[in-house]
Image (cartoon, rainbow, N blue to C red; front, side, top):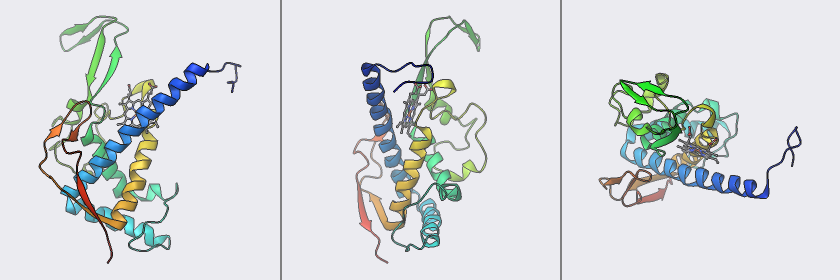
Length: 217
Ligand code: HEM
């Protein structure tokens, strides 16, 4: 397939793109879903509100209180509380704890000079857990998203021209699975106090082992 200027990708470039999409798109979203379910297990009030919105959505489409129907593109903007849960999950998860950049000119920053050509590692996790930007930053509080984050302080998907190509897809995937889980299931962490490992991606050492039960009433 060619673009409008007649250029096309080589077979090698096509393979690179496929591999990067699988790597960038698969594990990141799985970890986001794990953290959503983890935080909801520890936040019954948030889970109750999430369930309320999603059950109402299901019923409004002719579904039941126990089986989430397929949500569509038109449903997403109506799921306002769910969107806040998704955003808060991704903020706290810090799935990509850092991004890499190269200074393309000398940069003065807080009394330091970063010389042109130097590699810079931008530690995103420290931005998302900074109490100057997020009140009580380590608490899972979807309602903090009633107000937008201060400019530059929310970079979970990186930023600029290389911002994550899948950021909207990732949000959508977490939204869809949360809809079906919270309408039809309840769950519990087996080791709620399991230690968290932070690299390469943050996750509890037991992989967030949980028990699930299908709701029946
Ligand atoms: C919650 C899930 C995800 C998180 C937290 C995440 C985070 C990130 C971050 C921080 C970057 C680097 C951006 C930068 O350097 O400024 C990135 C790049 C990228 N992501 Fe994601 N990502 C997620 C899901 C996905 C999904 C679902 C896909 C595709 C199916 C995807 C595809 C990509 C690609 C292709 C890049 C490279 C973009 C470029 O260099 O131009 N990501 N992601």
